[in-house]
Amino acid sequence: MDYAVQTEYSDPGAYAGLYDALPDDIPGVGAVVRNLLIHYRGGGIEFTGDRLAEIDHRWVSSMLATDQRRNGTPLAVPREPVDRIVGCCRDYTLMFVSMLRHQGIPVRSRIGFAAYFASGFNHDHVVAEYWNGDRWVMIDAQLDPAGDHPFNSLDMPAGQFLSAAEVWLDVRAGTRDPELFGIDPGSPIGGSWFIRNYVYLQLAHLHGDELLLWDNWGEMSASLDGADLTLTDRIAGLLVASDNGDDTATKELADLYPSLKPAGRSYLTSPAGGGQFVWVDLVRPSA
Image (cartoon, rainbow, N blue to C red; front, side):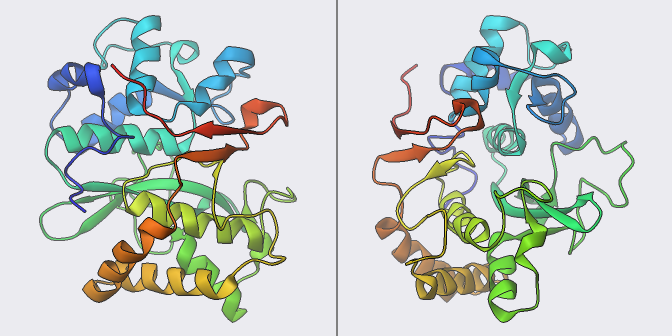
């Protein structure tokens, strides 16, 4: 896959012209992303109704449409927090990915777990990796680099973020406690079944289907009962091998993915749904 080319999800569509005025440096692009978005749980404002429903913006073009209806100014012009697009880590990352691809920079989103939001617990999270000409550089575009972090969020060291595939293999080997991975300590939305589902999200994002974190399809399920764990083991092993530079694993994943990708729709278990979960069509809106 050519990570310098927009996917259906990252394509800004009719709003691509807004990108022409963006900064041409990584910190500057990250600052614009944080100017546009506010986290639905971590932003300090409680959003409900239509505002909370913004977390279901699947496409960057839809996010930008919402911003321009509300603000109607260049993307770097400061927005008040309440006027920003309500989203989550996936949206910060996808917006960052979209902006860098517009500049011809190879960049991709990574699905997994962050160890840096709470001591002793690993929250589900999405970060980006861009190719700097020599290596993939991991960045958390949601974090302000000037914030109080024990690492450089513009070039994250190993161990701060673990891919879902890494965690799954460790859980299967008995070297990690699955109950330490999820959306929050003590939440039922976590553990082995949740990590397994994120392996499939990691696979999808790697192949340009940068889905919502609450999209569900195919092999994903809310328990391990009856689940094909052997298939998940295989996918996770290939993902880790591919990350480590194994071209054969990368090709095998590319050959395998078409049989595992969403077949045109997803079962949406959105936090904005109030417990009312629905099937939705994965159809990108026209400009």
